[in-house]
Amino acid sequence: MTDGKREKSWRAGPVRIRVTLPGEPGPSSPKERLTVERIVDAAMDLMAEQGYDAVSMRSLAKALDTGPASLYAHVASKEEVDQLVLDRISAELVVPAPDPGRWDEQLRQVMRDMLALYRRHPGSARAAIGMIPSGTGALRTMEGLLAICDAGGISPQASAWFCDLAAAYVSAIAVEEAIWVQRANSTPPGEEPDHPAIDEQLRAMMEALPAAEFPLVTSMAAVMTAGDGDDRFEFGIAVLVAGLRAVSDTYR
Image 1: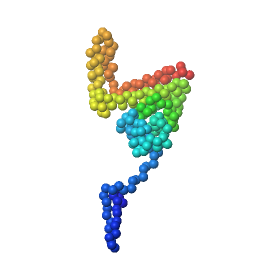
Image 2 (image 1 turned 90 degrees about the vertical axis):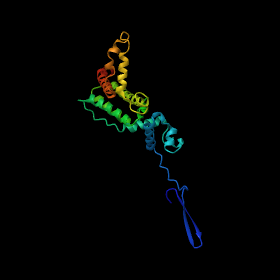
Image 3 (image 1 turned 90 degrees about the horizontal axis):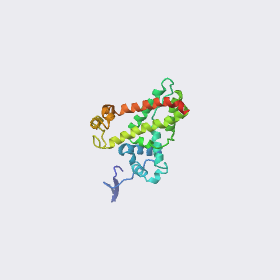
Image 4 (image 1 turned 45 degrees about the vertical axis):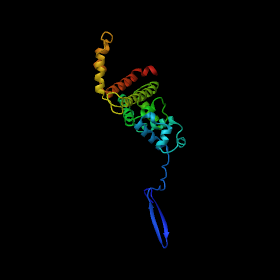
């Protein structure tokens, strides 16, 4: 019995007649077992395809062809799903063994790698906003960052708060990038914006302002609009790490 068809047979005297009846439903395939891993897979797929706000317990249940009550047997809430998504991503992040001679570059590289992961998993950065990570993967990342800071002679308090600051900065950049794509800017929603065109329009607008009222904005319009997203991200992580070194002794 295949392809949703069923066979029936009748006996006509000594002869048995078999007839295949098309279109009649065959036996349904057993559903794949619901697991936490499948729930996280579905959440990340929805985030990538429709954005973070598309993920709810109801939408996850629909994507998994089950009911919300079945999900609650595996995850307690949408917040727990966020934790699991962040933990899945954190497990992909490789934090190097601390090197006292280049601890500052190691911190910058970890932040670059964090942003690359968020870009590779669209929507996931929003799950990290306003959440205290408690999964094993996220905690291992935190342990690695603290170890690098310790190798650089950074005080414990400054190291601890830097972990929060670095995570907030990287996730905010990733969320902002996602919002740029969702909006209609120089391109329709869903397409990568034409940032050079946007920068040129912004520069022209700044230069056209009354110079007497905005002397610095008008004279610095070119540098205000210089550099792409990666340039600005690199500036940000350079400031964060240099600032960490500068204030470490203040927060002992």
